Length: 111
Image (cartoon, rainbow, N blue to C red; front, side, top):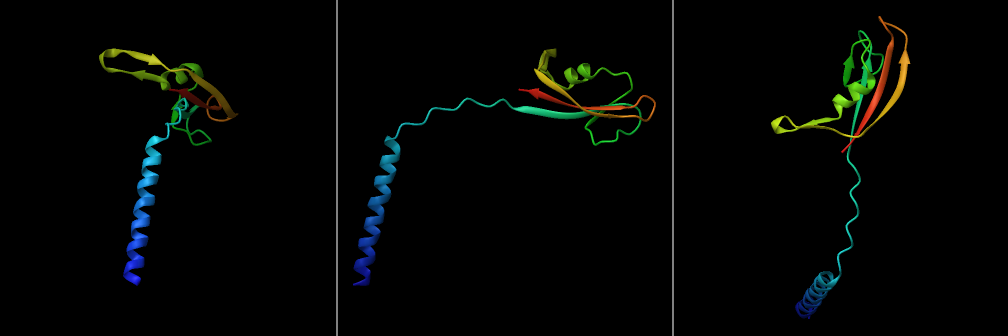
């Protein structure tokens, strides 16, 4: 009796799985959503010595923040071709000290 019940349950499970698989194949695929742009964030500091916050890039006094952002957001390809990505430049803070003070920024490159 238990063996027969087990075979009936197994057969029912097999039918259910087959039906679910066939139903899944017949459903239309949902439309692909537009890809959100990938971003690259880099934090940098302009000043002399040690910046008071953690950054990935440090540049000397007198450096131009937009030029640094363009350098960070430039893609270099084989053959010498390069392209500057669109970017957003956010000044996060500043502090007196060192030779010229410290200014730190985050640049967000859009891919």
